Length: 369
Ligand code: IMP
Ligand code: MG
Image (cartoon, rainbow, N blue to C red; front, side, top):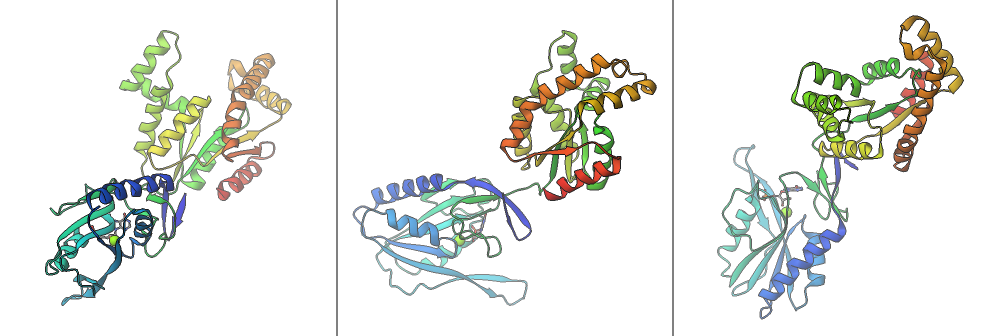
C-alpha cells in the first residue's frame, strides 16, 4: 500500500511486467524501422523513465529528444491552454516516433499532432506505454501500445499525483475505496466478544457483520442465498463457503459508506480466510487485523456457568459441554491464528478484566492499525 498526499494506492504493475512491455514495444518498433534512423520524442515529464528504458533497449542507432507541455492561462482565466514547447530541431523528412507514458483523453496527443502538422516529417508514429481505451476521445491512430489499462488513475514509473510518485520503479493504482478498518474478531465462548463488538462499532463507526445473524436474516427473509443455504442445511450438509461469501458480499455492498467492518464468526478455515481476503481485495480493501480475546479456560468456565444460571441456555449449564466448546474453539482457530500471524495481522488481547479495561486494550490495537 502507498499513500501520496490524501490518496491511497495499491500495487498494480510490477517492474518485471513493465520491462516486458517496454521490450515488446522495442521489438515491434525496431522491426518496423530497421532501415531508418528514427527520432524518438519523449513528452515530459511523465515519459522520462519510459524513454530512458526504451532507448537503452533499442538495438539500432537513433536520436532522442524531449518536448514538454506548458500550460498558459487562456483569455478567460478558467481557460487552460496547453502548448508543447522545446521542439527546436529540424525534423524535415525524418521518421518521428512520439514516446508517451500514457494516453488518457487524447488531448495531449491532439496537441502533438497540431505541432507536427507543419514539420514536414516523413512519418509520425505514436507509441504509448499505457493506454486507457475507455477514456480515449480522439481518432488519432495509436501505432504502438504497451499495456491497456482500465480508466483508473495510476502513479509510478514517471507518472505522478500532484508531483509525487514519479520516482517509483513500479506502477500503483488508485484505490477506489478509501482506507478502511476491517477487523476479524475472535474470542472463545464467554470471552465477551458481543459486548466488545458493540462498543467498537460505536467508537469507530464500523459495521458489525455477525455471520450467524446474516444467515438467520437471509433464511428468515427467504432471500435467494438464504434458500440456497437452507437447501444444504436441510440435507444435513455444510453450506459451501461461496454461499457464505456471497452473503457477506451483500452485507459489505449494503454499507459502502462504512468506515470498516467487524467480521464475527467468519472465517473459520484457511480457505475461508483466503476467500475473505479476495472479497476485500475486490472492494479495493483488506482485512487489517485479526483480534483475538484471550481468556484463561478456568475463567471462561466460571463465567459461562454463572451465565447459565440466568440465561437458560442449556449449553451454558454443563461444565463438560462448556469445556468441549472451548477446546473446539482453540483447535479451530489455531489455523487462523497462523494465517493472520504470517501477515503480521494477529493481535491477542487480554480478555480478563472489566469491560472498560478490555475495551481500552482493544482500542489500543485498533488505533495502531
Ligand atoms: P491525455 O488525457 O491523454 O491528454 O493525458 C494527459 C496527461 O494526463 C498525461 O500525459 C499524464 O500526464 C496525465 N495522466 C492521465 N492519466 C494519468 C494517470 O492515470 N496517472 C498520472 N497521470 C495521468
Ligand atoms: Mg504525459
